[in-house]
Each structure stands twice: as C-alpha cells, then as structure tokens.
Length: 421
Image (cartoon, rainbow, N blue to C red; front, top):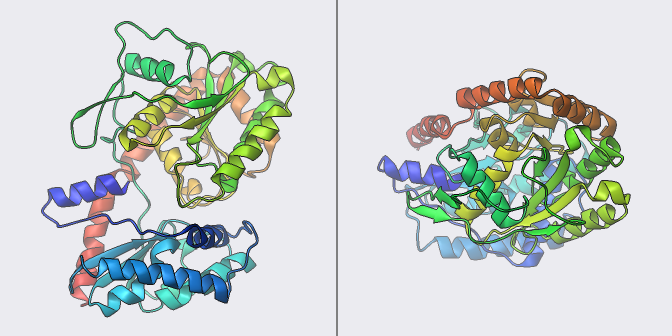
C-alpha cells in the first residue's frame, strides 16, 4: 500500500519518502504484544510494564537519531502503527508536523485494549493529528477533532492487483507448485512491476501436502494471510475439514498461503503459528488432509510475491478471511477487486468492506466453524450466486477503496495540518 501511495505522491511533485525503522527481536516482541492488545487480545500474555517501555524507548530513540540526519523542520512525518508511535515526541521537538496512523483497533474496550492504549498514551498525547481505519478504534485521548477516518486502499496497478490473463494465472500457479502441470502453451510467467518494467515469477513456494498439487480444474478455497493467531488459519482448516469429511462439494480443495515464516522480521510469532497449523494438519484424517495444502510464499521480491498472490486469488473459487480480529482486511479488498466471492468474519473493518449477502458473506461469529462450512458449501454448489457476489464485490471496491481516494483524503488532512502550524 505505501509503495504505491508514495509513488503517486512523488508523481504530483511531493518529496515523499518511505522509511522503515529498525529494531532488535526484544523490540518486536513488545510491539507484537501491543498489536494484540490494541485488538483486545492477550497474545503471549507478556507484560507491558517498565522493562518493556525501556526496550521500546531505547529503540525509538536510536531510530530518531538516525532520522535527524534526513528530516528538516517543517516536514510532515506520517507514522504508522504502534512500532513508530515513540518517534512522535522526538520529531515534534525537531520541528516537524506529525500525523500518527493506526491501522488496528477493537470495536469495544476491554482490559487488553486499555493496557495497550495506556502504554502508547505518553507518545501520542501531543501529536496534532491522527488517522484511523474506523471511528470505533479511536481512543478518547486521540479524539476531540484531531482524528480522521481513512480506510486503507489498494493500488489496482500493483503486481498484486493488476489485470492478469488466465494463461499467466495458470503458468504462475504451476511454476510455484500450487497447481499441477504442465503449464499452458505458450507459458506466461510475466507481470508488470510497480516501476513499469516487465517482471517474471522465478521462485517457487514451499508447500506441505500429502501428494500431488491440485489440478487446474479443481475449485480452490483460499485464505492468504500472515501466520498470525488472529488470522486463524487453523480454524479455516478445521472448518473446511468439517465440510469435507473426505469429500467436498465440487471436489474442492483448500490452500492456506502465507509468507515465508523466516522473512517477516517484525512478527516473532509467525514460525510458531505455522508449526501449530502443520501439527493440526497432520492430525486430520487421511482423506481430509489430502485436500489441504499449506503454502509459504517467497518474499524476497515484493513484486513477484504480489504476482503470486494475484494469481492465487484470481484462481480461487472462494476466498476466506476468517480472522478472529481484524483492523481492516486488505486481503478482503484485494479478493473483492478480483470479483471473487469472499467469506469473512464480521469483525473490525471487514464489517465495512462487505455487505452481507450483497457483496460477500459475513460470518456473525468467527469461531462458528459450522457456519463457515455452510457458507462454503452454498457458494461451491451455486456458481451463479458466487458470481453475483463477486461482481458486486468488485463494484464496491471501485466505489470505496482505491488509492486515489486515499490520496485525496490525505491531501485534505495535510492541508489542515499545515494550516494549523
């Protein structure tokens, strides 16, 4: 998302840059705990006390020193999510205008949300402007006219969302190992990179499965997510297992796809969650396990990774996002743009993205595995209904969630921030 927005901003003459903070594993353990807390979840139940604040403060102080050589008084810094909040006081003291953007939150308060917001409050109290994905996520001390609601958007020209012809979809999925070969003739590994140059999918996915890859004709139920407990990949697998019992409607199979677990530096839980999913997969009956594929996708090349996700979502018969909690489901928007029928939990921002029964299917309870199975069966057995939902989904994204709309909203926000200096 940021790669595209920065590019568009530079295209209209703004000196916009995207900087990534650095930290040690202890810092990312703290910020992952904050991530869970703001969602209202316990995470690993580790404390958010004085020792964790020392780790957080030291890391952001080091990053602020590095930033001092790049930024100037009068610049605007847009900080994203809990990892960067501690930069706010440093940048304000250096004469910058600061906006803090939070992509996550919870519709209701509990002990964990209060713990997370209490930890962040000292860094946010003096920041003049905030952006949230939903109004329900705004804590009291970030309100009082200081906050704007700007939902995340997608770039329809990125490798993850650009149009992709069926031969390219087929070739890419055969090459990465998610669909059985041979590829069509002539083969087409290609896509267009964000800078406009041609790209080619060269790497392969690591896939855990019983035997052969799915046939091209096999309908696929797909969830693409990080290996995060809140994305509930294991729950999706167990719901699909209840549906199948050795045979699924239309002989469908399930693909759970996420990033290579060694490639996401700020997610220390990813490898453990993936291992838990694999352990649960091994415990399934043979006939069910044979229909489920666990894929970790290459991430060394961001554009290549996007092209693989693009191909997988376009080939899916149904896309699932059964999150237990979700700030805003970008994978939901991406699948909707590709006119796929989406079955998703009625949590967080997903409730804004999908109109139940109109542009997708919302599961009232994310833990109701039987409801997931019923929704999947209905769509797999009724392709016309799946097509109707997919077409409406595409139109809803076109109306609400494209990058140009975010740019216009950010332009209004920056104008307001500049006028207040």
